[in-house]
Amino acid sequence: MMKRWAALALVFALGAAACTGNGDGEGDGGGDGNGGVTQRDFRFVVVTHGQASDPFWSVAANGVDAAAEDMGVEVEYQAPGTFDMVEMAQLIDAAVASQPDGLVVSLPDADALGPSIEAAVAADIPVITMNSGSDTFADLGVLLHVGQTEFEAGLIAGERFAEEGVENPICLNQEVGNAALDLRCEGFFEGLGVQGEVIAVDLDDPTSTTETVTGALQNNPDIDGILTLGPTGAAPTIAALQEAGTLGEIAFATFDLSPEVLEAIDAGDMLFAIDQAQYLQGYLPIVFLTKYLETGALPLGSVDRVLLTGPQIVTADTALDVVDYSEQGVR
Image: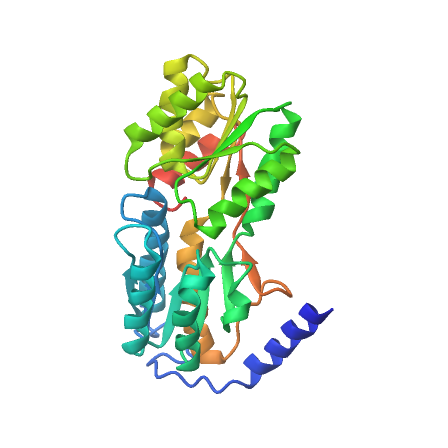
């Protein structure tokens, strides 16, 4: 009940907000009258924890770029070179100091990034979180979160593995300490009803990941289920299972998509992938911030102010339909 009242209070607050923005196309619906895109004088900064070597984040960045073009706004996309919360906080601090019209951030570690985000809010910069932070964003004064609830997504994966009779699972985590990924593994084991092992792998070293999975399979021949938390873990796992001659025999699924993952699902070598539509996670916050500055209103998504882009389950029945989108960099 308290959450419901808090959400309603926010609705009233947003309705009364004096967001006057200085866009040239304010209130004009986005057209210039000649079929072109109205160029608005808004500048937004996007700061994520996504590493350049991770194809997941290139798709999210594609969404940011497309929204910037569609909305006629300037957007700067920034990320640390590695999963580094100190560097990410510094990027957010620098963004706040530049006084943008809006800020979009991922929130993998609220303790590390919270003070920087609160400083943005205190400076009257509207902030939207995306991808990670669905359970912590509201405490920091953030307007809205765009993404999926990670524990629940992991729970769904675990329940599906339970249907396959899995009893000895492992969860491969390429960013241990990223709260969103940690929650995926926790939800997975709870949904499965079995406490398995979380194995850390190196996002930047697929050969090392393959060796890690190979070693785990050799050390524990009873492993009958593997969940990876992204394509950077899935592709090396495919190689390890091929090498062991168990691809298609051990229950195997992943979070997020790539052409290789989709082909493996279609071939029956993987059970499914959990897609959180990261293109939309990049795209929608830019649209929402633009319209917030022009109207003072936001789509709240739910009483918890989480606008869900996932989980969307991709199975063998739908994998081929999604391949073209993945190759285009939008899934």
